[in-house]
Image (tube, rainbow, N blue to C red):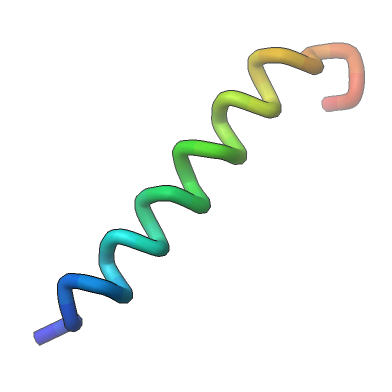
Length: 28
């Protein structure tokens, strides 16, 4: 099983990337 801390970090990274992509659609 994946540790909860590692899972939380992955979720934060993915969430942050999605927010960044939505905030800067002209860069993708």
